[in-house]
Length: 283
Image (cartoon, rainbow, N blue to C red; front, side, top):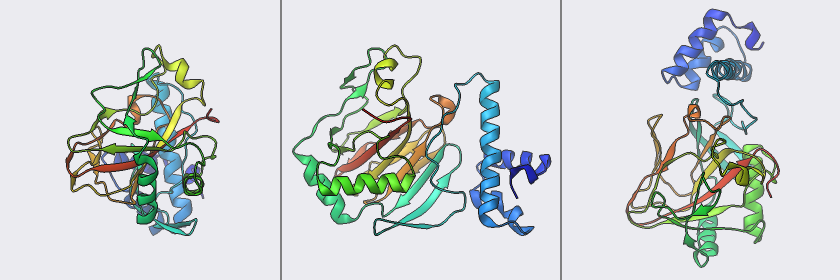
């Protein structure tokens, strides 16, 4: 059975419930009760919601949707084994499409990545949509560095683990970036995609096309503060070592509801590992 087997009335109910914030397990429950297999129910619900979003986008004159990583099924497995790591799926949101993951990295891996990056840190830059240049900006007060592809065996291993986790080709991603936030440091609300209408977009898009998804992994646990927030969706995720937040955006438009921020660190420090995924091969 698939989405075509669902009645128009039930499809409308799904859309209404998703719009008011129903959880994935609530959406598929009626189908399970009438004998659907869980995977088929999840796939059908996902198809209904994606079709609705695409139709709405066309009506509103939004940019066309592009393929994005879709690694985590609605009400799917709560644990994924990759590269000897038992990664936990702790929660998710449908719109924006956000998934909270646990144990993506071990404590030892986090410590090693911090040590690798510590001596390379520079003031973080922000993409200027007008000029196409990356430059320091008061909205982003962290320090950071990119780790060259496969620069150490550990970096190569984590790059491959992340590619396997999200189901996106290894070469369609930017190099891993490590960021450090001291007390008071933050990254104010922003989108990760490049504004296609900005004068500087061409410079960014020529290196692999648009960004389509992000994975933010926490390398330590701040004493206080430093959460990742999604203001438009009312979501907040605490920074816990080894956990990660994955989110995708199939349109470079605010309708993706992926406006997000790194809240100020109140006490201690925060280290994160960021991976941005592209439409095409990066480089």
